[in-house]
Amino acid sequence: MGFQSYILGEVTTALPKLANPTAAVEMQAYMKNIAPYFGIKTPDRRAALKPIYKSAPIPTSDQLGKTARALWKLDEREYQYAATFMLEYFQDNLEKDFLAQHCEYLLTHKSWWDSVDSLGTVAISPLTERFNLLPLMNKWNKSSNIWLVRAAIQHQRGRKTDTDVALLLRYCHDHADDHTFWIAKAIGWALRDLARFNRPAVTKFLADHPGLDRVAVREALKHAK
Image (cartoon, rainbow, N blue to C red; front, side, top):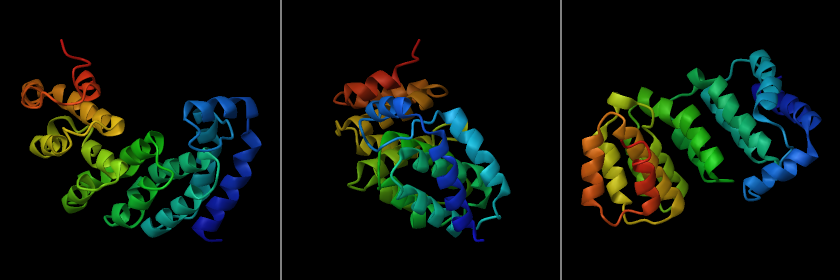
């Protein structure tokens, strides 16, 4: 059995068995009805999925992308979470072209902060650190799609002193006049991370951009002393 067939068969068998209708209503409401839910808590979901991934054939990067796309097309949100956990589990198998060939599709379909930020953690950040993907990040940063912009702005989060500060500030500058909540939040989080090791750069950026959305400013200053 191929990787995709195995994963889809096992995952679509395992997750419905864990459904909790009461929790599903709460989760769906919290996530603004972006999708229906089974109502499975994260620890339970990951516990059910881990042995499936452990027993799976070793996938190629393209197989991971195609399988993630297939899970993305299923209705319940936990299937998208299963896809991002799969990418996390097989992270070392992802290749340089994964972001352009598959992740861009995932970012721009059934888009919400939960899936976009998870993809940033499990695929975008590690792959942009491993490979030279600056042209793709520049493309996303100039996109009319807010989720690609958000992913570009946040793609260096967690790198601390390895952060390309000039690049991060350029991306934030490019969208400093954008008051879209999800863009402003991304700028704020990126600046907050930067402030942990380079507060003067953040202080100067805020001074140079007095019209920056208050959501971004609040996030940037969240841990200021």
